[in-house]
Length: 197
Image (cartoon, rainbow, N blue to C red; front, side):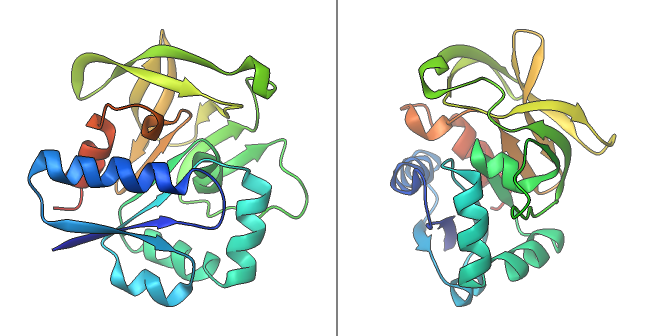
């Protein structure tokens, strides 16, 4: 039985839990999804999702709770990980607009610009093209970061908004500017789960 953990310190945790449960069901995979708040829970999971939220807060809380270092090592050692919005920021190698106290996992070879799309009022939805499916996916962009540079050829585009890359994959890691958990479409969560099972 597969077990997925959602880092549950701040952000849209419950939405990811529900989306992952629906994806497991649609794929016919027996599994569960847990809310991860403590480092000892990391040993129970087969994959991890870092949700959207506020990256400064997530970074600070991951350090304070002791999740940061073991999670970084586990992802570096191959634990499948998906980060959406602030989760993408947490995974990124380089972050434009970071605050001095922010610490990042640096497991995804991309440079991102934090809050590149502007304020909350500048949030939007738009069709996103996926590398693994011909049907467009409705991307929900909320104060989203922007992927401004792929830093190695290990990083493969996974999603595009028009001609701009808005989602990437590097081995066991997926990073998305947008929020797939805020739609009823579970294809991205299903794609992530297929990396695990």
